[in-house]
Image 1 (cartoon, rainbow, N blue to C red):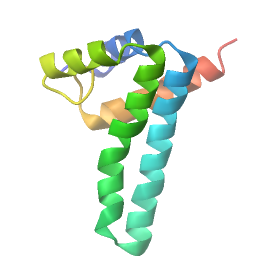
Image 2 (image 1 turned 180 degrees about the horizontal axis):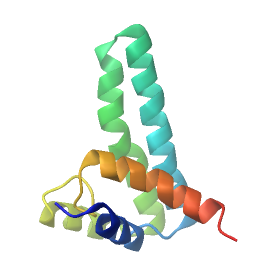
Image 3 (image 1 turned 60 degrees about the vertical axis):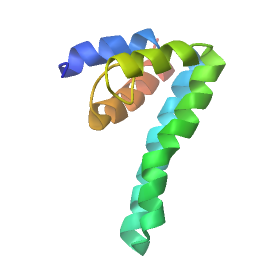
Image 4 (image 1 turned 180 degrees about the vertical axis):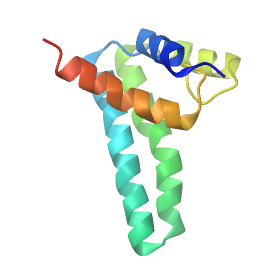
Length: 106
């Protein structure tokens, strides 16, 4: 598996459009919300939401950026669910970091 910094560089290559970055950031926020709901209500459907929401919101972001097919191909080649070829936690962090970096850039 790639180290954190190299994975973030690879992640940034495929996430350049502001709307795509925003959709990816929302993915992480919605996942945290579903995790919170799971802890409070202990309903397994919320865990399903945590697992499935990235496939919906990230897909919308990549369709907007018009690189959906390429990202799917890279994911398949890296045997991962993301184009950076990293684990889900790193990917979760990358979404937040990239949004922060692009939203508050001077």
